[in-house]
Length: 195
Image (cartoon, rainbow, N blue to C red; front, top):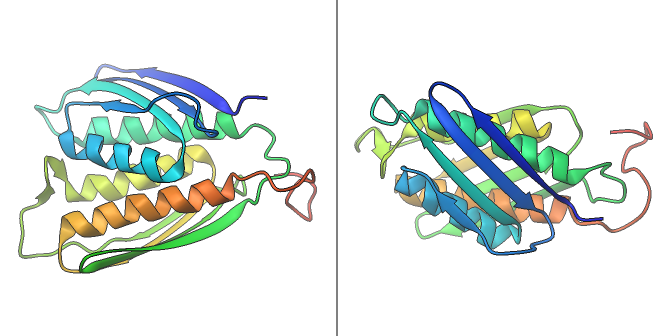
């Protein structure tokens, strides 16, 4: 059975479409007005092995908050739908990724119990944005993805360069989720018998 899903969300502020395949069927593409977000989603897709198509527009002339949040919401919902029953998956995984001066550690548990702890400290000596995305909305995107994907996310990053830190986080998240969704058995990965 194909582990894929598509989600659409249209509000007065945004119009978002996300399609995901956890088993990498088809090309990936990120088309939003936020170039840095596109770059991170491309990196996420490459290192997770997930096919990911994101098409989004929104009121970025006001702020990037609505678009970052709604893309995170849709990615989480699509990811959760694509997981299906979760029978046989590894469920828990982690990854540590360095990028030049920076290092990110990401742990995930696809437990069905959403929770996010994102320790991504940004430099106080630089702009309030990384590329064209507000720094606080990067954290908000990660939280929105985890909460709507119903998984536990724990992120810890360090380094000097904010771009490097964020990119290391997206790559580590990709690798952790790639391992967590891997089907290695037939049983439900929980002593409760359900997730």
